[in-house]
Image 1 (cartoon, rainbow, N blue to C red):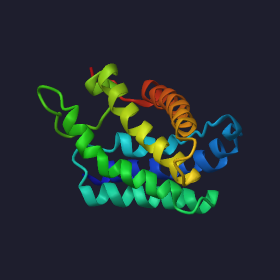
Image 2 (cartoon, rainbow, N blue to C red):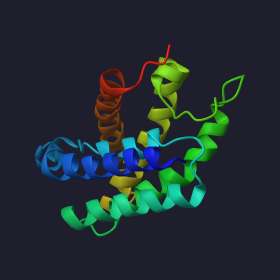
Image 3 (cartoon, rainbow, N blue to C red):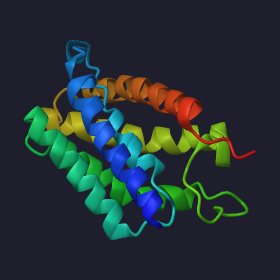
Image 4 (spheres, one colour):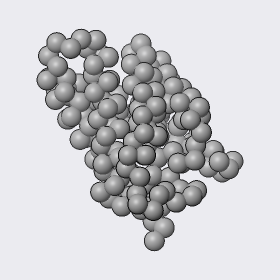
Length: 172
């Protein structure tokens, strides 16, 4: 990973913390069971070639930073770390026939809308399900928790797709 890519990802790291803490955490939708965890975008769009330890470290520090601001006791760090752990497996399962192009990152412009929606939905749903399970710390009302995770996933997925259309590089 080049210095330019590293600096762009560090900038995205800081931007997502800022957006989550000062904007999205202040949108009061939790009474409806919706939490906008947009910061998962960083893990979704990191380059394919990122080493496993750097991916996990990025997820941990992003989650920990958000936990410190939101006083959530490690919920964000734990759920984001698990998503980072599952990302390579998800990429392997969704591997295109020709494989992934070198020096690219997951995105609509590279691999198409349907591929990206499947990829993003799986990881965002896992993140939101774990987030709500850790918040509740119980399997009571599991279907309500599943509902909250699904609704939150749809909203975050819409924002992730919107960010892809607005800021994703079109290489074709």
